[in-house]
Length: 139
Image (cartoon, rainbow, N blue to C red):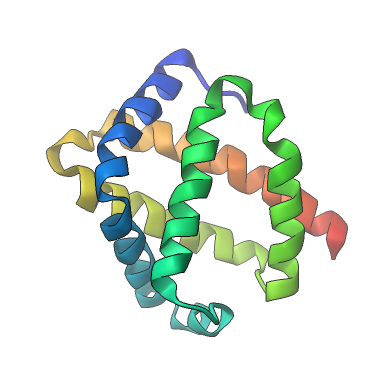
């Protein structure tokens, strides 16, 4: 799966609206994640606000690398291997995707069009598939 220029543009532009509300977006994301699957909560030992900041940083790196995804594949594979050690399973990626898209809808409001959601879905699917493949090799 590859991304179109339009998808990259939509994700990059919408990300610029998320950056100023990154702390809130992180809190929204984890609140929604634990609402969707409360069994995930024990995986997060530290401060969830710090975890939200880390998530937003990782998403920022990914968004900035959309024109050259090959540059971040090793980092995604490494992160996936660490996630296996935390107890992350393949089915968790779908829940994370749902929480991410919901968070974007909350944070972007009317600017979160169907086209924007489709673009973010394509990006997340690409990232998640890369990570799931690396995790499967680890397990």
